[in-house]
Length: 358
Image (tube, rainbow, N blue to C red; front, side, top):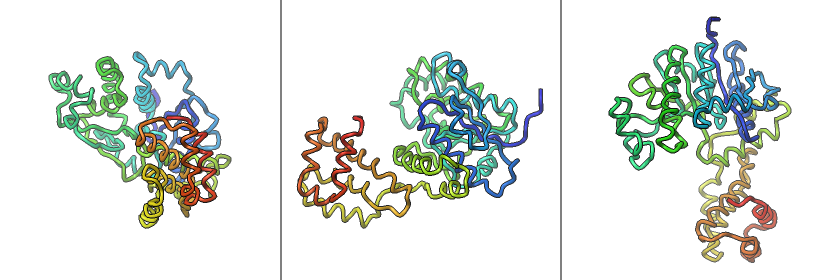
């Protein structure tokens, strides 16, 4: 067997929708931007993917992931998050240090700082946020708690991890074998619970490894995902042709973790001017106006349509009935609405008419 490479390996697993590839490309560019000035040999980036094309202009190793391989990695139950642990296990067979990161991430600093937190006997995760006993209504608790406690694997004090980042030293790769075995065993009991993968990692690491986290080093935008995707997609639209150019890497720093909403004074103004509207339209138009604010940051500005779509979704929930085209037209032809929105009114109306129903 060849000796393991000591160079840290930053690993992505990307397949399916174009959106995930766009996220990965931006995340990688963000890492490269923070690595500027670091020797080239400091870090390797690997991408397991069903589509190598998006990564052709990036300094990464693409490892083809065909449908048959992915299906095998998801066996025996077809649980697609199982592949995360299998991919990282593959890399740790040949590398001393590896970190698998979800595509919906970007960096606040050099990725090398994440690897500084990965030592033998340590698991790096994105975050840990609660303990197992805090949500006894969850199927992962109701179906498994008694059995796991009897087997000495978990109790109410076990910390639950977010696996947007999984970083391990090769010496601790057996933790992945344990988590994979738990996924295979527990899947039928919890009806394929969405978070089973990170739950099993929590169980495998409990009382076995020191757990560290890194939300201060990366932004994992699992919350408010559509807003941050809009920022990322605006960057991709601008820089896809040259994702490692000076301008492209500089612009990664302009895609911030700031929630792109108007300042408080502007929101208060929106509240004031919408008092002229019928009660049932006030909150809806306030939220529409969030998407009209002229942010100085071009990537924040790109989030406007997402605010409009969210405003419509919230309005549907408030009125409790489907919003047909006729109702939407009635709202946007209201005299006060047209006065408040001005020239933007028709474009916003058109955009929402063409937004797929949710």
